[in-house]
Amino acid sequence: MTHYILVHGAWEGSWSWDLTQPVLENAGHKVTLVDLIGSPGNQADIPEVTLENYVQTVVDTINQLDHKVVLVGHSMAGAVISHLGEQIPQKIERLVYVTAFLLENGDSILGAMKHDPGGQFLPKLNFSADESYATAEEETWRNIAFHDVSEVRILSALPYVIGTKQATEPFVAKAVVSEKNLGSIPKTYIRTSIDQMISPALQDKMISNWKIDHVYTLEAGHFPTLSVPEKLGALLL
Image (cartoon, rainbow, N blue to C red; front, side):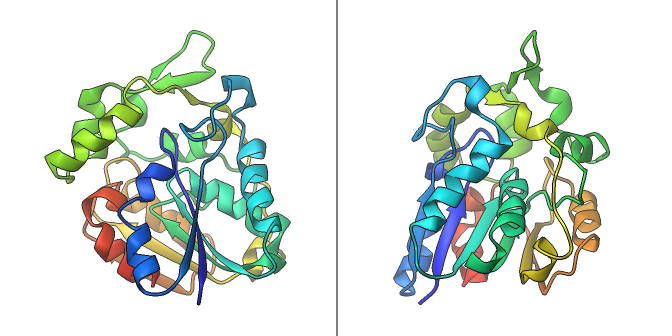
């Protein structure tokens, strides 16, 4: 039996894994969903929502266990699981990046997004006056994030993301990772070929930065957790 820990991306919560979780559990595996600080299941004020606190939330979850885990991160959570790989590599069996940020040391999520000509999400964000958080309009979610998701699933997701304030600190925080620690852990990357938030070109660039054991491609946008959760689950298995 494998123990999967699923970590959601920005503007999200553990709800985003609701359709993938059963695929893994029905195959006989254990699944733990993490609610990162600031998400609906772990609410906090904007100043508390930092990459460091994201990482600590997952560390606290893993430290309660006496076995290794497969750590899965979607989107922004790629940076989170990379830091876990740097800090507690001995507790991680494998890291799985689902159209996620796999940064080099010293890079940031925002920096990667700024250098992604195919990424359509960043220019559509509405930043607060002090730039401490950002929100996105329904049209942006529908047309860029959920463009390949069924209407029923879009309607279930929109209440979680419309008007949600995503702290920007995790996006500007620099990655602190090394070949010795993060580089020592087996990695899988699941690409999404019609992604408009993290373009396939940026995904490929990030994949080239590290030794990746397995690279899979889903014909999906940025939320395969909503558009093709069964296929995503099958790849995780």
